[in-house]
Image (cartoon, rainbow, N blue to C red; front, side, top):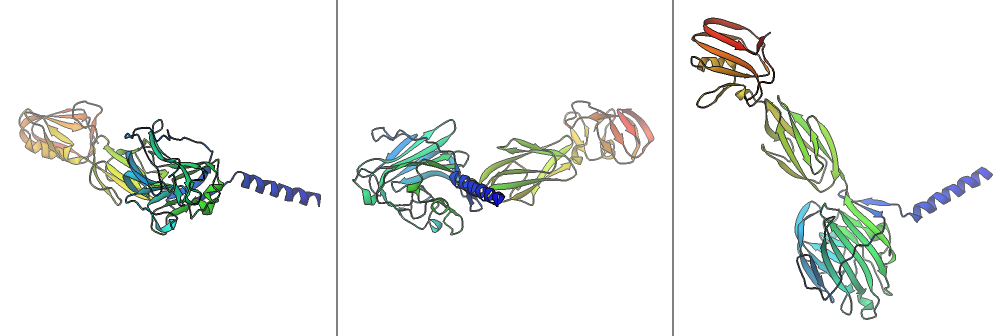
Length: 387
């Protein structure tokens, strides 16, 4: 009996700690909403400051300000260069919604810090300020509920947009007597992708002194290598360099740059079976688990060269020999050639093997996997091994 009581007490204590710490996480498959350590950033929050590209404001009832962002902000996979912020506690992406107390799931794209009818007609306002280290835009509201308008019962909260796509909502203080919350959070406006802070935690007016983070849900990039050659691909912003199949995880909505580079004696020939295409750097937004295939092929077309007024390249040693003039030096990579070479012309040529892919430096020796038959002329072999 005593051990059962101890067990019950332990369970109760754990539940208390869980509730005390407000441990939760909600996701809509694109973003994750979770509580984080409370902090407050704030703005200058002054109606006397002159508007600048780094500072703007608006005040009143049903008022708004359109702000040009200092960098593109990606929200639900779409890049935006500006936002519209209203005095009702809402940030609009794209067209201004111009509404309050709305259905979060089917409105937006939007960030609603407090989905309510608010007013700063008698005091306060909405203030937006660009800050650095780290790069961020802070949007601060000092507003009353419309029902309390003129009662000097201010409510203070903010949303922070970071340049890497993260969002944070900080709730500083509330003094509302008449308050409501129609579902605060974020929404893509498709009925499926939205995060309702009110439903996950509590009405906003009861979360003073708490902060919440909204980050991209983890997405997987599978990078696959194919082809007859070799190379590597750099994944930014992580800075990961892969030269064989690799997997990386990023928050959903992360904009990635995949930069392919061929190894010696190879060419990057194409992207295939994914969002990437062509033969250049690939820019993609990781909104879902994605597989990209980088194809590197052996550069057979340039593996033999004959210098002179202009360098000429050949796919085989035999083709170069057949085109050579008397006294020519035929240069070969420090790699393996599979062919049977027949020299049957009345001229002197030199086979010089062991070059790097640029034919500028000798780095090893070449291997002829086959046979060499000299039926006529003179052949000088340097750095050539026959197997």
